Length: 253
Image 1 (cartoon, one colour):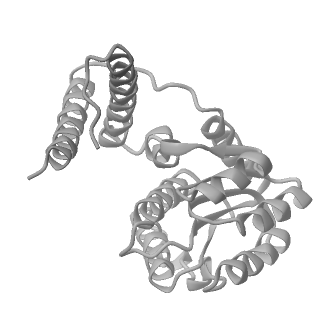
Image 2: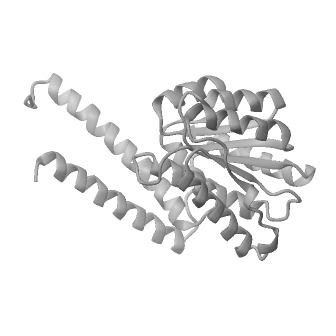
């Protein structure tokens, strides 16, 4: 096994050890506060407004495949969808979910159905709550735009795999005056969201939704472990650069 593979394995093991440590520490005493992310604070406010006004939230989990590299952000979106469903259980109008992939659409509907069952409201579930709006990037975005405009939506949560087509969805939300919280694992999509979305999620913030929506101890521990690993990587990069500058580390070809 190469040094690179060993280093990668070491980082993975260290991450899981940190996550377990933070989880058990959080059970023994009051967990440390999370670093503030304005997007999730505004999302909680938007959820409260939706409950009071009888409007609904639109949650899109993107168009990533569940067996590809985009699956991580897709499952992060599904996790946020499940948490939002439980938070708005007393709302007159429950969230609607949109997807751009067939398998992901099935998972979104199953997530909604499970949430209704857990809340004891199985009879209120309708298959139309989870919608496959298109199977190509721009058909997915175009199919989501009428949903945003015409279904009494007060806020949009876009977490998953989105490309530049997400600009159309953000624009539809802007025309309605809705809050749009959005994050993606796609660099072109992140560039668009940074310029267009009211509350963009950058980098690993896409995967922080569970912790900020009070999903449980493991979600919080995972986020705290991410923060530690980020600073560790920053220190290693800076340390390596300094050693290289001083000529104390050989150049690898």
